[in-house]
Length: 293
Ligand SMILES: [Cu+2]
Image (tube, rainbow, N blue to C red):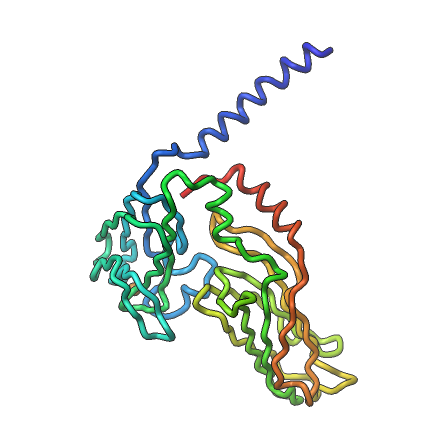
């Protein structure tokens, strides 16, 4: 019985191990490619999509890695320019600047010192990404992935500002999500829902980057004035962090708020509920099969 068990399991194990080895690139891989994202980049919008405006939007590499940045957008010219954007005002920091790249043009940058380099497109400043450079050999797959999912839900603060909630009018909802230090959160996807009585007046998905912090939503027209007996109930729930192959499901409640007239315009700062264990479990289960990029 034991022998039979062994002989059936061993081939399965062999297949499993082979599959894992295939999915992990060799440790000496020191070339990384970043492209412009698919889709329309010439008007704002890509930054709201889960994929972001560059692919990958956030990448972690070892010192010495050669990073090739390619404009794969056949419909537009773009740049990869190191620096930050405040509103629509960019500030170049000088680590690299591809200059204008026509379709299929590439620019190469060698990551020579550790640190985090945000970058953007000079022509479309909503296009933003981040390159994180770490000590060579310091990486493990877990470390790489943790970069994009370092937020726990109990470290997220939600600030919700709403209109007054008048009958027959849509109510605006400005949602700000930050960490405990007031910094933006990297790639969080959330669902925002509003109900009044039994009526659902808003139910949509939102996405934020590190630089976004605030998204505006609006309900459909309210059935009646918001009041103590008929408040608008807002719920913001996390769906996950990161994007593409780095995506990690992290379902859980971030904040709830009841809107009644006297409190309608007051910001509510609500600490989120911790679901660290869920994050940890889904992280591990995905990591083992994820190729490093
Ligand atoms: Cu551009």
